[in-house]
Length: 120
Image (cartoon, rainbow, N blue to C red; front, top):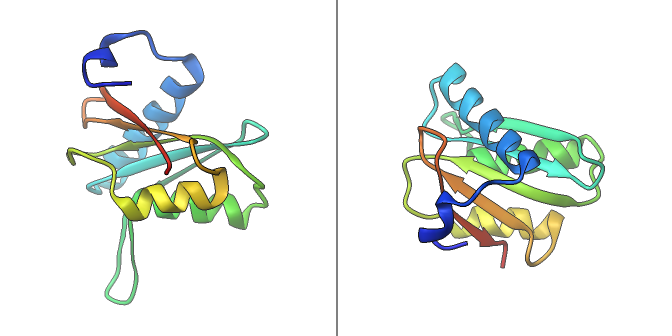
């Protein structure tokens, strides 16, 4: 989906993970929130981690939570951030569990979908 297509109706399941990502961002007061949906439809939500000894993006943390919970694959991922693009390391984490082509949705802090990019 291009930036222009961002105004198109969003699948309800994708809207759900954007809403979850936005909620965790606001609740935890972190720069990013993320949510992933596994192959069974379960969702995992996380904010960015910024400890002295550990730094993970919200999407990396959500993928790690899915793996730790036994997920075997991902259907989709969402990040809510002020960033203009999804970081390469985040796309790699989604690709590792979901495979090439897993959609990664990037929404702004207001929850508006800005773009969808495949994990490649």
